[in-house]
Amino acid sequence: MMTLPYLEPLVPRTPGGRVIPEPPRRGEPGGDPCGICTGQATAPVWSNEHWSLHPPVGGSLRGAVWLAAREHLDSFKDLSPEAGADFVKVVANVERGILSLGDVGRVHLYRWGDGGSHFHVWLIPRPLGMLEANGMMLPLWEDVLPNLTDDELREAAEVVARQMES
Image (cartoon, rainbow, N blue to C red):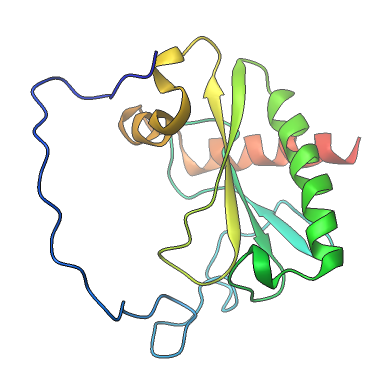
């Protein structure tokens, strides 16, 4: 059963007015520079011709990682056939690596893309038995659980990367 990580009463709010045209994202003309292309992202723990795997900065779930295209692309539709085919293999290997950490119920794959235009996805482990964090609730719970250190997050990502190679 999915459960919000907040106590009642939660009150729905009315959405604000729509902003059209939308402001440029990082990496788009008129927006801030792409943090991935300018080297501001965390150093990768693994990479190949098409993809690089990175630990997060801040977070509470051991094994959470993000996978970025090596080329500045915006969306799935922009992937070359080779990068698209490789994506499936790489994501499967990342999932195996995360599962090897133990204490993982499922690995969730998320793509938001609203903050920056450089294609990347998040692979986030749901802790074993933490059923209230099923589905779309996992990112909400990730925000309220106690944070790990950046060193702990990087160490877990390095284990994931090593498992991908075995």
